[in-house]
Amino acid sequence: MKITRRAFTAVVAGAIATPLTQGRLAHAADKVVRIGYQKYGTLVLLKGKGTLEKKLESIDYKVEWTEFPGGPQLLEALNAGSVDFGSTGETPPIFAQAANAPLVYIAHEPPAPRGEAILVPKDSPIKSVAELKGKKVAFNKGSNVHYLLVKALEEAGLTYEDVEPSFLAPADGRAAFEKGAVDAWVIWDPFQAAAEVAVEARELRNGEGIVPNHQFYLGTRALVDGHADVIDVLIDAISEIDEWTKSDTAAAAAKLSPTVGIPEPVLVKALERQSYGVKSLDDTVVAQQQSIADTFFKLKLIPKEVTIADVVRKGKA
Image (tube, rainbow, N blue to C red):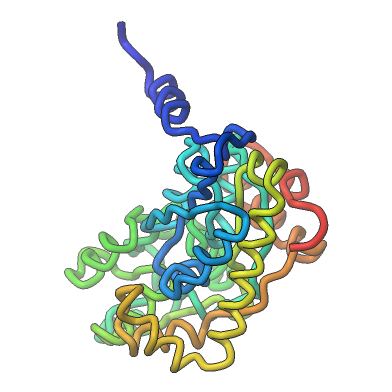
């Protein structure tokens, strides 16, 4: 009997579901929160410092960490039931919501528009976004930089159809960029900082003035509806890491560089462009996300309209 891809995904999701994703708890040994993280943002720092594990012990929970190359891949895992909580930029949750993923916005960090940019090689003749017309541009489809590209092109009097998209995850994008297989690369920190440090990539346009570039913390509906105690611990731990990193970025980079696998100069550069201060979503942030969602629907990049407010956790972060 032939099994469809959708049916296969459903079988896999059911097989890997834990009591947490099913919205109920069994024995304390089964109380595990599975966190998806990327090589950017507060969660990779939280993992590196190791403080969350101790905090979760107080409520008899354990944590399992899984690294993803980008937000879209992380939210695919959340949709499949293999991740309970994670952090992404602005765009991945919109694509995921349009695909009916059971996600909920829990909290966010303040805007960090300098933490993503359109890069070109240091010796590229391209001096402005307008000169990208007809050029090949690499980026991770459905990621926060997807929206940055759309808005930067709009600002320059171009449309999304004026460039040739090359959908590549960060590692593949970096390789294509260095080989000269693409004319520009739209990327976020720390990959952005790494390219600037290692190959002297030149910034063509960052997000300042055109996109906020929020970092969002998202969870499954089962986590949000059934395990408020876990969320409280997570947000408390994130807040502590925020304060620690903000207070002494250089010291944080020096301590965490070996554990997160990012060279210290790159980590310092990225952390200085990051924002800190986890909080719940207010009406302004929800409206900003809605504007992004409406833009992608108009461009026919998502299959249906979505209402951001429908999947926002109410109350405190």
